[in-house]
Amino acid sequence: MCVKKTVRISQFTVDMCELCTYTNICKVLVTHIRRWYRLIIAARKTLLEARKDLWLTQEELANKVNISRAYYSNLEAGKYTPSLKTANNLARALGRSVEDLFL
Image (cartoon, rainbow, N blue to C red; front, side, top):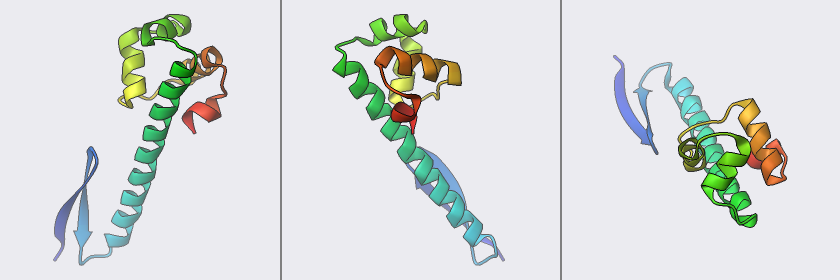
């Protein structure tokens, strides 16, 4: 019999299987979710720091990149992931590489 246990990792909820062959798969999934979440947090801090280093407001940077301030705010908060085009435009506007900002 498979007994399921719900595990909450930050804003993600994952059903972990106990006493079955899927336990190892669930553990791997949880590991990947944690890594992904750490990358989002790191990118969020990097965007914020890069913007503040240039003394730009969110609105000024959003105008340079041709996106809305609300969308940029959500990127900085880690709620959205930018498209490749937007990531390139942000990196160019901030004088950084895409890898520095998002990896």
